[in-house]
Structure formats: structure tokens, C-alpha cells
Length: 250
Ligand SMILES: C[S@@+](CC[C@H](N)C(=O)[O-])C[C@H]1O[C@@H](n2cnc3c(N)ncnc32)[C@H](O)[C@@H]1O
Image 1 (cartoon, rainbow, N blue to C red):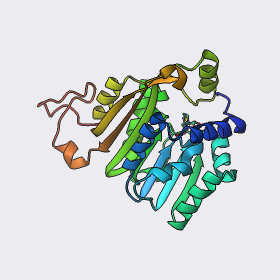
Image 2: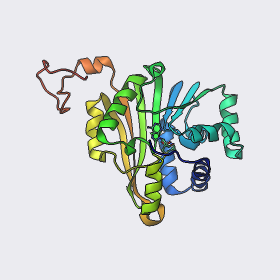
Image 3: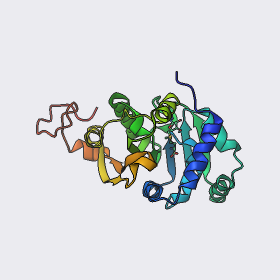
Image 4: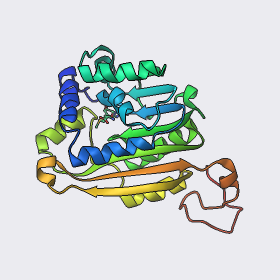
């Protein structure tokens, strides 16, 4: 098992992110959070920005759940006295939003999440998983969403971090270059029962100083059972077919 990012790394990640919140790159990435909707919201790999994320939602949920592998992220969220975190917590408190923070691996199924969420989002998380894990995660997300619920994914790619910084992040399971290509993600979403509502790629003007060359985002809706029942496709290739003897979505 990899070592966890220590608390000082988590704190610095948070304050660095906060310091660059008004850059074009951050503003582009954060605008995807305006797509978060519904009463029940899950943040996968929530990291230290969990509370701050809610500032960018169009409406605050009644239930907001964060899950992260690294217990230092959850400890930071619980203990931090950073004014921005306190402010974000107060806004959620005033709304009576029920908060749950869970230390767990998102690759493992959580039975209490099944058919539970209106929105599941992952900011800088899903793009780090190799294709087999990525597909399994999409299947879990599909299972966790209510019918018509949405997945929002934003990821950073074309990495320009120094080798040392990249190795450090990889060792903490904080970032990895192993995720599928944007084109492949499109195919995998369709294979796992999602329809893409919106997708965009941002090309960073100065990738060397930003450390990444591209950011991509998409909103994908869970296709409900009626829509699935009316369609037939080969579950291994994702290609639509008239041969409905082939199994529908697994
Ligand atoms: C690049 S950080 C993004 C954090 C946060 N979403 C944000 O917007 O700042 C990646 C996060 O994914 C978490 N993570 C990585 N692998 C995970 C796994 N298998 N299960 C749960 N969390 C994971 C890391 O601990 C880290 O908090």
C-alpha cells in the first residue's frame, strides 16, 4: 500500500488551491460545480476542498457526503480553523445540510450508497485510475445514482510536473497519469449506462508554469431503466445492435 499524503502536504495543497482560485484554470474547473444538483450529493476523493466546493453549487444539498482514502484529508476537514473553511461550514450549517465524511477506498462498494445520490462528482480523481478500475468505478457510480442522477468529472491531463513532484503525488495516490484518454472515456461512459450531457476541454495557455496542459470536464446522466430497456447494444463493444438477443447492460 502506498503511503498517505501527510497533513502538511494536505494543508499546503489547500492553501495553494485557495491562492489560485481566481485564475482562469481554477475558474474553468470550478464552474463545473454549478452543475451539482439535488438533495443528496457525493464527492468522490473529496480531498481538503470538500467544504469549499459547496460555495460553487447552484443549490445547497440536504445531504453532502465526502469520501477519501487519505485519513489526513478527513482529519484536516474536521480540525482546520482556516477562516475559509469555517465560513464554508457555516453556510452549510445554516442550510441544515447533513455532512458525512468517510475514510474509505472508492473502489470498494458502499451498500448504503446504492440508488441514493442525485449528483456524484469527482474533481481531479477519476482520471488517475487505469481502465479496468475506471470502468468498475463507473459501474459503482451508476449503482449509487438515483435514476436520472448525474456524474460530474473534472480532470487534469498532459502533466508537466517535475519528475520528483509527480513521483511524490503518485506515491500518495494523489495524482497519476494512468487514466483513459478523453475519447476512450466517452466510449466507456456509454458502455456503462451513461449519456453525456455536456463535455469540454480547456487548453492551458501556459502549461509549463501551470504544470498541466489540459483540463477536461463532463456531465453524464445515468440512463434510467426504461431508456436502457428500449436499447440493445453489445456490452463488450458498446456498439448498438438490432440483435436484442445480445445481453443488455451488465
Ligand atoms: C488530486 S486530489 C483531488 C482532491 C479534491 N477532489 C480536490 O478537488 O481538491 C485526489 C484525491 O483523491 C483521493 N484518492 C485517491 N485514490 C483514492 C481512492 N482509491 N479512494 C478514495 N480517495 C482516493 C486522494 O486521497 C486525494 O484526496
